[in-house]
Image (cartoon, rainbow, N blue to C red):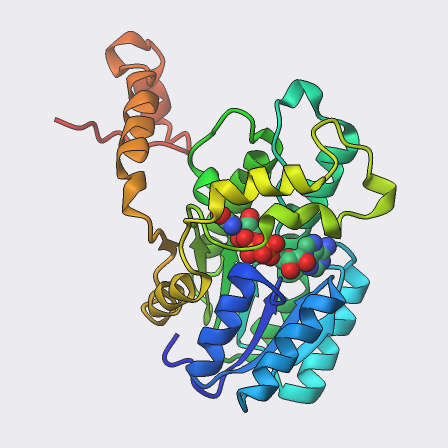
Amino acid sequence: MTGISGKVAFVTGGGSGVGLGQAKALVKAGAKVAIADIMQDRLDEAAADFEAAGTPVMPIKLDLTDPHAFAQAADRVVHELGPVQLLFSTAGVSQFGPLQLATMEDWRWQIDVNLYGLINAVQTFLPRMLEGGDECHITATASMSAFIALGGCGIYTATKMAQRGLMECLDQDLADTKVNCSLLCPGAVNSNIHQSMRARPSHLANTGFYTGTEQDEARLKSVIEHGMDPERLAGYTLEAIEKNQFYILPYPEFRVPLVELQERVLDSLARPEDDPEYEMRISKGVPGGSSEQPA
Ligand SMILES: NC(=O)c1ccc[n+]([C@@H]2O[C@H](COP(=O)([O-])OP(=O)(O)OC[C@H]3O[C@@H](n4cnc5c(N)ncnc54)[C@H](O)[C@@H]3O)[C@@H](O)[C@H]2O)c1
């Protein structure tokens, strides 16, 4: 993306945390910004702060699990600000606990927000971006959980790994277009994600994990309170977008777990000499691999 200034940006989850940080950084970089969020009070507070700073944004109340509402929100932004060139699919929720305690409602809620939220964002904006013909960029906020599985985070991790798969394929599918992609994978961020339960719909309220009490929230906050400041994270993110960098991984402390994961996977991979059909698959060009072997 050559320059953020003057571009129109749409940020889901823009009322809080990572999304709000992205909105602040985008406004500073000269973009016209719409922030979408399900929580009206957060939108009101954020919009008032931007207004007071002399840099108004467009607040939009949106439940991003609803594709029709998403399309209507996109229409409103195009009408007020112009075609969107920068999509930030950032809103997300988390809830932790061992999978043996999870209810179907725990699964449904996190998949709806984290995965369908991204799917709805892409389905809504990508056709418009391709048709408009401008240089565009789609950034999905996943997590280091998109790479590294931690016990007790099963549902969240499943959604984040699915986001990675979606974005890696999308990046390849769009290689010959003017739409580029990035996958942002933060470690801890000092946000309000510990209050996720406040945005949970009542028909999915049945939880096997916890009920969103003050003690639950305090316990979760203690995990993220020393995390990165959202605006600093957004600074790294915009820098990477301007370089059309796909993976945005601003947390060096994950090098060792990533190397360990790679080694564990490669240690489990069969060797050519142990597989009698290997040569045949390679000679027939069976897709998915490479005949090159490391020295
Ligand atoms: N905070 C962290 O430590 C951390 C770490 C890695 C990744 N992330 C990711 O960052 C993203 C943003 O989370 P955050 O930490 O800023 O949390 P946050 O709770 O501060 O912000 C998320 C926002 O999403 C909104 N939201 C929830 N459900 C919605 C829905 N159905 N429709 C529209 N908006 C909805 C919430 O109202 C909230 O304002 C998430 O995808 C999360 O997985 C966060």
